[in-house]
Length: 219
Image 1: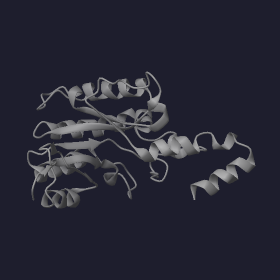
Image 2: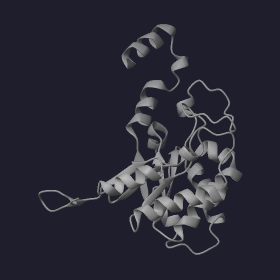
Image 3: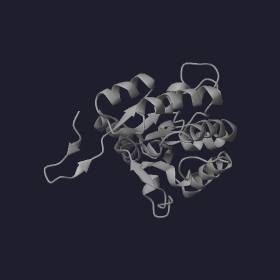
């Protein structure tokens, strides 16, 4: 496969979004430059208990081995909304897609969050692994997540773990002035999350006739 180069000679990095080892192999076959997003929740879904640190590390390392020297971005657990976990109960919410999910849910369960972070950092000793926090909406969320990363990295990794931290901005909340720490190495904003904020936030506060019209508009 050929590198992605524009007519004016600019080379574009093409990274894959994957959900497991098979996806990583396919991405390499298709000529990807790396993995921009590993959806780590595939390890947690359709089971009754959370995966152990060793189990997570084994999968992350296998994917890293498939990628060779290509970068791997591991997104920490992003469940809630349409991805519930039976062993990680989430209180009912009016807008679950925008509520306790992503990094906020992980921070409510710091022991399990630390297990995943340590597994990712263990893989980072051998290859180019980066860590992404999903659905960051407040500066404090990013700071607390960073603290867990530092606490889990007493050993030497191939690069400074803090410089390898990435975050996924959460629509409207993250767009607020001062909501996030823009010193992070990478920031991504998803249009789906932004759209949810524009269309769904505090819908229950609208009069019934407006809720009905909004529902029709979404369809």
